[in-house]
Image: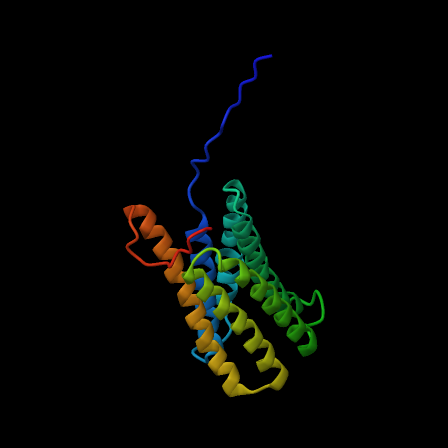
Length: 196
């Protein structure tokens, strides 16, 4: 019996720059607040809801089409992180539910720190740029948790600056990935890890 096979080539666009830029820009803007530059405002919540949240979820779903389980897991998870963070802030203000206690907030941040640390291990097979993003994000979550646990204002301000660096590294990685693809050459170094 003659059998024929059809191979379907994926020609869809790379969603990683969108996901990285959505994460990075929203993280920088939130951490400018954490560093004391301005109050928690509708701009941060809007970015968290639509760009950090919705755009990352879309990028993650598109990564599934690329057969990239890491990208799917990371982008959809952090997209829903932003959506859950906005919900934690907004829902109590609308009177829908009581505000999150400090203990619960610390647990939330710690769990995200553990999750991010585990994903960092995966970046060891991808690129140095992503290693920096995930290492600095792991540190950010734990610093936020410690800041909330201790109430140390100086630590919270320092954490804001660390978050700006983390978000900036994601912006760099997103733009570098995009521009290297546009120009067909490694214009911006990413430190791609050679697969064994």
